[in-house]
Length: 425
Image (tube, rainbow, N blue to C red; front, side, top):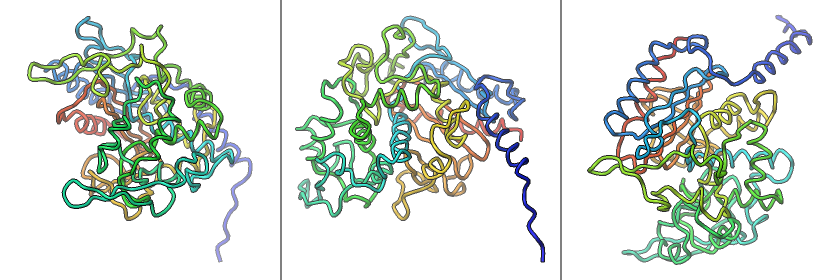
């Protein structure tokens, strides 16, 4: 019989200390070759994205690629403000829209780790308006019937977008329009997010809880829930618990006036080329992030950030909850967040992909049919930004631009191909 050899405690301690050292090292730009990326092959990426700008398909962009805990590629393209001929900078600030969702989802998990809630709890335990909700069931023609929800909505339903809650433009869109709750944009609202969410609870949702994936206000509700449970405003909670510990000093719901010159302009494609979006212009405009009421903190789509700031958050997730020697969340929490929770519920749009607690998750690379790895997680934003984390390759990719709508531009697909072709080990 073979006996299992025990690992000496001193070796385990050394391994643990080496891991801490890795996670505590400064997040900085290093030569691409030093982390297994070909600097020569990354020129294909540079040339391709410069061509998008030259052809007038992109106003400007920032691309960041980190590997093995360091930034291997960081490049700014085009203009942050075409009319005023301002070049894009590596520290330009972007509206990241739905990329806010991942950070707020981590905030919820922090509260579970502190024993303040369980994600299996009904939302109504904390926000009474959600104790009993309704669902709009389509009837013949444009008619619909409003019925009671078959069970309470849970926090996990919100994290996985399986609560049946859309963006107010589904079956009972007329009632959502009357309530003035439609679309993901909140920056111009003078109503605090808790008040909006409480009003939302009285409206009929699009599906029964747990029935299907419906993308919508779920994370805005989670933001309101964080406020109720923590006793702090969402901006204060996220700043003190996540942003400040990670050194995300340029991530804000509303931009400090001193940073206004770094805010990138939003553009829209037209037959005449890219045109400056209206100001403030709502969802398809510049937004009220500078001159708005600064009252409504949208957990679903409210943040502004830089590529480096957001990469710090993603690197923390890749590091199993740790960054620069600070443990933000536990490794087990990260593991739970980054596996598929949908079960038999199909994820719309992409084969081989599921959804975890705030991120899409790749389950079957062959079915998905694009370069990447099983276990990769990520998401994007309405202004055409995107990100992904590939744990197998120790890879973090952040791509920020300000283009709405994108009209079938293939830059996301090209970016993926150009990053993976540069891997050398």
